[in-house]
Image (cartoon, rainbow, N blue to C red; front, side, top):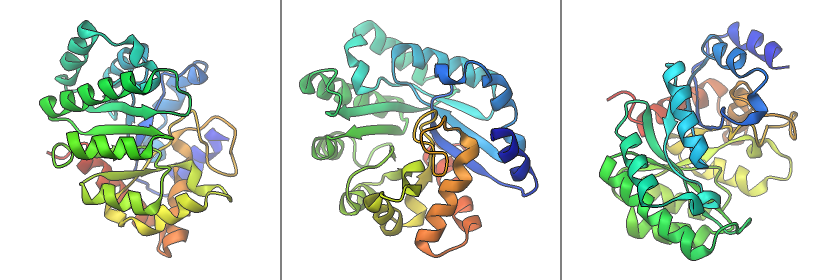
Length: 270
């Protein structure tokens, strides 16, 4: 399926930027190099590979060195903040100074899995937000079942500084617009294609197009009709087409604007 999609995309020149991926995940172990080697010819000309666990952070750096169109984010997901200590925070600060690193992420709060205490999550979320400010890097924010606490900490600690993306946004359109007022972009992925994703469709309709970026969170959250299968950046045209239908505009406009937004938030044209 991915080979067929690559062939179809090569017939039309595309410029797509996946703002949030996990290509170091074991789901790609069998064909990672083949898949990534074909991305640019398929129109996917930018990918940011996220940190989550400590291993992910280091592996993202290796991928970014290997593929010039792929960039790294350095940050620890709330499910893994128990791995952090002062030494590792210093290492994150060091990685933030590398040219391969374009963001701090993914960081935030996750009260769904509750793998770490809320207080510990908040502590390391705030410290990584402050690290991003010191490094002058945008942030990529994870928030699950923690919408108000995430927003309150973002507003108090980070608003008006380096900007960033609220990844896999899952709260209300009203809250999305509040984040936009604070200067953030909203990440829209495969969920917007699901039939029962009423709130996400409302978000995609309400947020100004110049504040939307597209993402996969691959290998997770593949869009329909591939829901439940391994996701990849090659499926992003389906997300772009869904946003276009919701907004009543051409897919090429969504593609062009979201591509420009991604390069702007990650400061790749500076």
